Image (cartoon, rainbow, N blue to C red; front, side):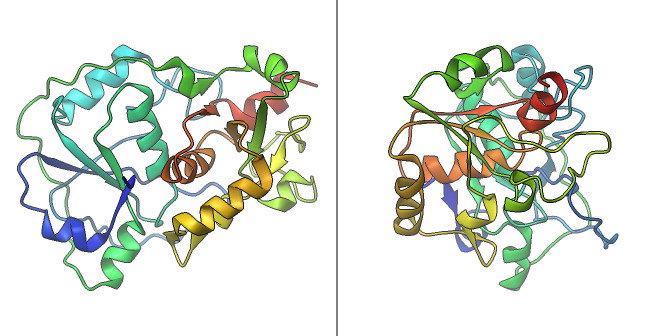
Length: 268
C-alpha cells in the first residue's frame, strides 16, 4: 500500500465527508521565497507545524510536541479516529512529510502525503481557493505516542556504537561535507559521526516521490537494510527520507528530532 496519493485521486475524492485535507506548508529555511498570492486546495485546513504542532518552548526549532498537545491540536482540526487524512505543502514534498511523521508517531495510521503537493495540483489545472476551510466540529482522535519513531540526543551515543543502526543525513551534500555554512545563524558546520549522506532531493524527481523501484535501489545501496535514523537540520527534510523509506516497506525507521541543530549546538 502506498503512503502517497496522486492529485487526481484527491480531486476525485474531494467530497468525501470522512476526508480531511491539511496544508502543512512552512517556509524553506535554505532559500528566500518571494511572496505570492495565497492559494489552497479546496476544503483544506492549515496544519500549523511551527505554532500548533511543535513545542514552542523548546530551545530548538520544530521540536516534537507532547502527546497532549498533539491530540488537542489534531482534535481542533476535526480529526476523528476514523478520519482519512491527506497532507500537502506549497513546495511540493517538503514539510508535508513532517506532518505525516507526526501523525504516525502519535498513533494515527490513515494518513497520506499528496504526491507533488500544491505545485502538482496547479500543474494539472485543478482549482484552488483563496482561503482555508472552516472546521465543522471538534474531533475525537486519541493520540498514542510511538517512542520507536523518535530518537532523542540521549540515545545518539548508544546508536553510534550499535552497528545495527545507520544515521542518514538528509541535508545537501555541501552542508554535510562542511563546504558551506549552516543556514541558521551561529550554528557550526559539521556532521554526526559515522552518519552517511542522502540528500532529500535524491528521493524526488520533478517534485514527485520517485518510484518504489528507484527508491529501493537508492536505499539498498546506502543502508544495507539496517535500522535507519534520519537526521537533517531540524527534523523537516529528515521526514522526507522517512516517507521514502516507509514507501518501500522499511519499518525500523525513526527521526532524530533535534537533528544537526541540536547535536551541533550541544556536542562539541
